[in-house]
Image 1 (cartoon, each protein chain N blue to C red):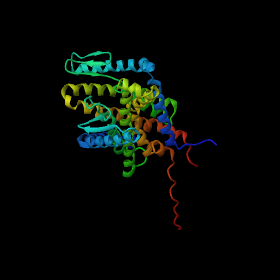
Image 2: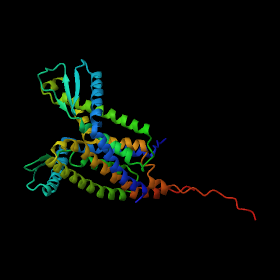
Image 3: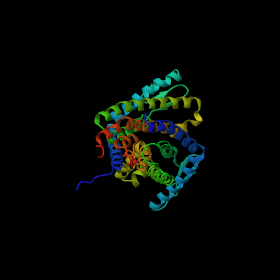
Image 4: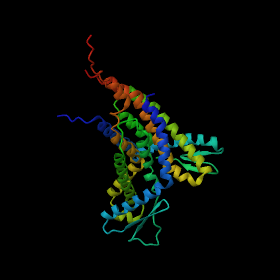
Length: 202
Length: 174
């Protein structure tokens, strides 16, 4: 077993435990409220007229529309399954350090910022898919079939695969794996030749 | 003039391409009904067997594992396929000999399914004994556990087996 694998087996579980603790002990609440707020701004940026309002409370995003009756039950989305992959990325950034190049603090921040953008996209897609497919006649009137199909497929791609592939992709892009895979580089590159020494003249 | 990509970029693009391919092969409804649903029911049966060790009287009906105290529905996303796809895409994208890849896929995919069954049983036990934390464990801890286990298996495979292939292929510098 190479030193990199030994480090991985020790560090990845510890990093995952630390990231999970950080997430569950308050990190998720703060993060999800920010995601909700940015998603609301993003949706309203493209909406004509601007009718969507999102509120975040106790782990749930409630969707309000000013053009719907306030007596209707507002739909609710649980964002924890959308944003939980932060734990996976943090665990990889902190725990898979023996593979690829060292990722500095600012690159880690850039990776997390990119993941944040995907969370806003995912939540916006979830809300738009809800508008397009789950509001009965209203959905059918306002969203043509191709739009409903496109939104549904995009959301499904996020839900099933991208949500888990993105942390690995971000970590791979930042670490330069597999080029810097330790065993490959150690075995492939020859050891540097010893420096020449002057023999002492007798 | 042929375009040569940096190896790490080539790996990521191939990985992403395989992910999209696997999605395209399983997402359409007819393929989902023919492949994913029966597979999910099979995973549920195995999970139900595991759950019955901890909760006698547990039964599996289609994709539902039910006991008098708790029940779970195994859906797409809980069947371990997403981790298998990630692992498969990474192994296929990594520069290695086909024999090494096939060995990695055979061992890795079985291991991932075993880990996923452990996850299902653990969630079932959590649902019975600690229902207030079930949602958090289900949506954050359990997926991270399975995905990171898949990534770990891939990195071990890449380091132990595939990297040796890369080294063998790379001629030593003169």
